[in-house]
Amino acid sequence: MKPEPSHALERLMQALLTELMPAVQPAYRQASVGAQAMMIASVREELDRAAARRVEENRALRALFAEAAPAIMDAALRERLAGAAQGTDDSLLVPALEAGNRALRSLLVELHAHVESLDGADARRIEAAIWRELAASTERRKLSLGPC
Amino acid sequence: MRAVSDLERRLAAYLAPRLPGARNVEVSGLDRIHGGASRETSRFVLRYEQDGRKVERRLILRRDPPGSLIETDRRVEFAAYRAFHGTAVPVPQALWLEEDPAPLDYPFFIMEELSGFESNMQALLAPPYLPHRAKIGRGKWSILGEIAKADAEKLGLVGLLAPVAPDECWRRELAHWERVLDEDELEPQPVIRAVIRWLRRNPPPPAQKVGVVHADYRTGNFLFDKDGEIRAILDWEMAHLGDPLEDLAWGINPVWQWSRDGLAGSLLPKAEAVRIWEEASGLRADPRALLWWELFSCVKGQAIWVSGGHEYQEGANHDPVLCLSSWMMGNSQDRAALMLLGHLK
Image (cartoon, rainbow over all chains, first blue to last red; front, top):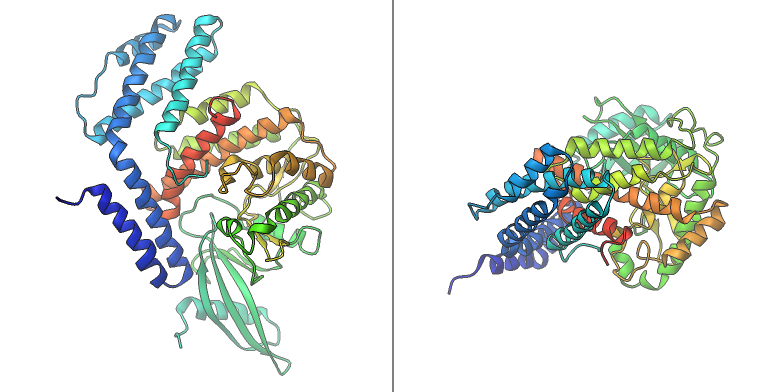
C-alpha cells in the first residue's frame, strides 16, 4: 500500500515540528519553521475536501440564484442570476472549480447588496437564505488550528 | 565566536556619531525576533566606552521590511513611544529614528529592549503565566483605559496624527480599511462586504472624545512578567486619533481567543474587560456603539489578513505567517463577524 498524500503531509509536519524546528537557530528561523509546519497542517486539512467543498458550494449557490432570480427587480442582474443558475462544473480539477466558485461568490455579493435594498417578504427570505449560505461557506472553509 | 555581520558594522557606524564622547562603539548579537506585522524587529547589544567606563546597552532595531502585513508610518510609532514614555502607559524608551534608507537599506528606529518578559499569546496558556491570566487581563484593560483617557495635545501628538471630528472617526477608518480590501483582495469576500454595508447603514454615535487609538491593542502586543504584571505596551505602528471604542473592540475581537474558552483576549470575560475599561477611561461603552466597532474590527482584521496574503502571493514578503494568517485568521475573522451578527453560533 502506498502512503496517501494526506498521510505524507502529516508526517512531514511532524518532522518539521519535532526534528527540524528544535535544531534551527536563531529563534526567528525556528518560529518560521513552526509557521510552515502549521501551513502544511492546513494544506493537509484542505487536501481531502478541496474538490468536494467547492462542488457542494457551487451547487448551493446555483440553487440559491435559481430561487432568487424571479424576485429580482433589476432585469440585468436577474438574467445573470438565471444564467449562473444553469451553469455546471465541467471539470473537477480544483483550479477550475475555484474559478467557478469565485465567479459565483462575486455574483452573490451583488445579489446580497441588491436584496438589501428591496422591501418585502421575498427580499427578506432571500436575504435570510444568503446569510445561511454565508455561514455554511465559512464552516466549509474552517481550519481546526484557527482561534474561533 | 561569530563574526561581526555587515549589518552590525553599519549599525555601529550609524550610532557612533550619535553617542557624544563614546569610543570603540561596537554592535553584536543582532538577532531577529519573530513577529511584528509591519517591521523587521531585531535585538542587539551596543557596547562602547565613555568617560573611562564601559557601557553595555540592550536595544531593539525596528526596520521597515520590503513588504509587510500592514503599511504604516514609522514616525508615528516612534512618536507614540516617546509620548507615552514615563506615563501610566508603560512603553520602552524610543531612542533614534532614521528615515533615510542609506544607513541600513531601509528606514528604521531604535529603542531600548525590555528583556526577560513574555509577549506570546500561547505562553499564557501554560505555567507560569496561566494562573495570572485574570491579573494580566485587568492590567491590559485598565492600561487601555489610560490610553483612552490620555490628552493627545499634552502628549505632543496633535499635529503629527491626522485630526478627525468625533462624528467622522468611524467613516474615516471604515473607508481606509475598505480601500485596503479593494486593493489587495485575491478572492471575493461576501461576508466582510456584507458587514461593510451593515456598518454604513447603522453608523455609530459620534465618539465621546477623540483620543489616541493604539489600533493594535491585543494580547500578543504587550510584555508581561511571571507575576502577571504588564511591563510594556508595544506595536504602536497604526496609532492614530479616533474613537477610543475602536481599541476596546479590537482587543475583545473573538479572533484573539486562542484559549478557546470564551475569554476576551484569552484573559477575562468580555463584560469584565469592558467594565474595567470604563472605570479606567471614564468613558462609557454604549452597547450599540461597541457592536459597531466590534464589527468594524472584523473588517479591519480581514483587510490585514487579505493584505498579508497579497504580499505573500506577489512575492513581496516570504514570511509564512502572512500566508498562514490569510488562510486561518481570514476564516476565523469571517466566523467572528457572523457570530457578532447572530448568523453563526
